[in-house]
Length: 171
Image (cartoon, rainbow, N blue to C red; front, side, top):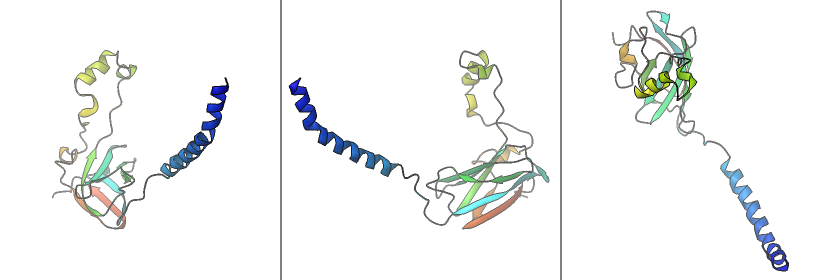
């Protein structure tokens, strides 16, 4: 007993110092995401097709290859959207962006939502699960992918507003 007591008492000051230093290190790491550097943009607007809003909850995605920056937002019932940066540390830097618009994700069937033992779930996974882009008749196919999109926009520092009618892009 004496050996354990004397060993524990001898290491106690060292363990206390280690715990205190560890707490400071952890708190230092929890300061959050660093703020983006460089000129930043904010983006709002609307997405229409022949003057009518695209489907509710469609996604609008902006991608800038030069800055490796992505921002996206959901379309509301009026066709309006507001973008948020995919990576807060990068933000939405100024630059030229390719724009993609995708219809809302189809909800999973109730039997597929039942879990991995469900035949519908297994069938969906065999077909690649959610890897296939959703399809929709109201968004032209050319805008469903960044690779095929005909829409490129230049973002300037500060607020940017774009009212996009997909039927008029490229004409």
